[in-house]
Image 1 (cartoon, rainbow, N blue to C red):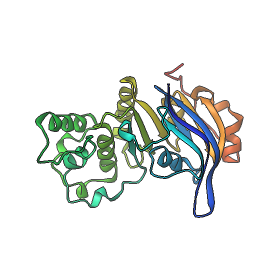
Image 2: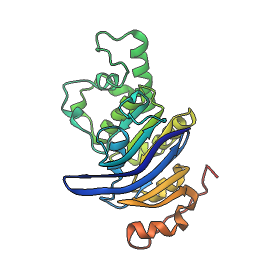
Image 3: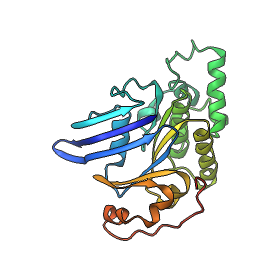
Image 4: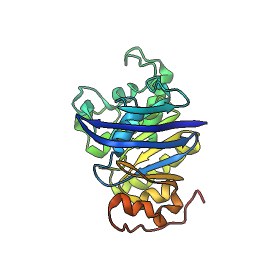
Length: 245
């Protein structure tokens, strides 16, 4: 089954297109990466997939349906922490907002609170659960937003530069967490500027710069001619033995 499809999608801001005639297919169960230079339209693709914007032309299908806002199946973590940091709320309260349907904190049942606690433990923030989100570092807030996306048990998880602001000490644990989420059956679409990280973690990857220059197995990324076209010059990638081979 196809989890996510872009069919000749064009979209931009004001009158300037950011992506043009993009066609991509993410199969259910994929760990799919999107790479490209700054301003290539990577974040825009995820916003469109999450239903936060409508394409100028073309179609976006999520699990076979064009109405992406039938989005209980989608979890989305943006690149830059939004207004949550200014909310007068605790970490646990923010994460609970990802429960679907969203209950009030006072109206939450015991099993829902236990679920929030369990997700916070997975992202390494169990000790911060009663902390106000405004007191967190950027990396901690990024993990709160991941927990908020995960607590609703999405079938499709959209991650935009999730390792930004996450310190090196947690990055390895973070990668292991993503692999566990994927192995549990969740389809993941991950945007990153780190080609080496991407070539190791995902099983398929697309390289875009307004249009698609390469789409295929992650293990083939380093040898792809299209990646040179997307970046406009040769790109050095440190190759790993790929876990999906």
